[in-house]
Image (cartoon, rainbow, N blue to C red; front, top):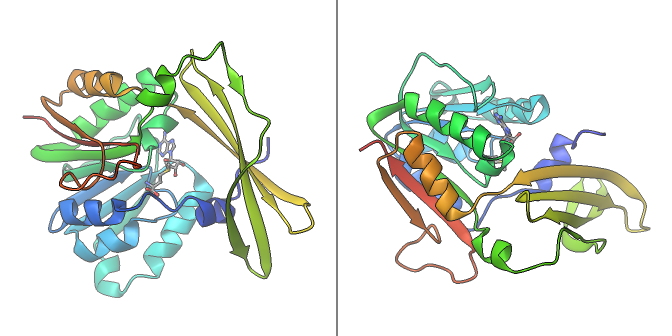
Amino acid sequence: MQAYDPELYALVHRGNPGDVDFYVERCTGHSVLELGCGYGRLLGPLAQVARRYVGLELDDGLRALAEAALQALDASAAARVEVLGGDMREFDLAERFERILIPYSGLYCLGGKAGVLRCLKAARAHLRDDGRLLADAYAADAFHAEARPGDLSDDHLEPVCQVQQGRQLLEVYEQSSWNRRAQRMDVTYCYELPDGEVVHEGRIRHDYLLSSQLEKLLRDAGFAHVELAEDFDREAPDPEAELIVIEASPR
Ligand SMILES: C[S@@+](CC[C@H](N)C(=O)[O-])C[C@H]1O[C@@H](n2cnc3c(N)ncnc32)[C@H](O)[C@@H]1O
């Protein structure tokens, strides 16, 4: 299977409204480890406010884009930043952090509960006792609860957005396949020229979790204090947001 082109990935996967402000506010003045830092979407904003920022990324192409984002920083911000290759389910850095982040449904990229538990245990081992784990993911409880007779394979192509790559304007469509029993969502992103020619297809697999499962895994990994919210702004939650925002600490 063709790998998802990192530049085309970066043009489409731009985060959720309010997430940058949320992470910037929580990380200002702190040492930060972002697990699954992708192409460095949060790296720039966090490099401006964090005392230190380390991004860990498994995918070589996305990591190269994050390294390019690091190079684009001014010298004083760049001196606080590091981008590392590695697996967030199994890493060993000689450092403990005040904030560990798993933004934008990164928890659903770990193959399900066992991978998430390994990741959360590794995160706990790298978090200071007075530190905080921050994460967000799309909320799956409501759609998972909808009774469906078996798996759903959707042939329908849903328009996502238009993106400009160089001189090419591309229309992006997504097609999802949902295995409810396995709690798995496979999404194909099709990048098409105006004449309908498909120039790229990128695939993403999500093993999503329900909020009760996430809460249990956090506690099993050593997070005694767990808060789950439905949006980044607890004061004025957006009813359309459909998110789980996690703040957890060891005590
Ligand atoms: C949904 S993206 C989030 C990227 C970034 N944190 C953001 O907010 O834009 C999840 C990222 O985790 C990376 N990833 C998936 N599995 C990983 C693993 N086992 N270890 C490290 N990174 C991983 C993916 O390559 C992807 O860049």
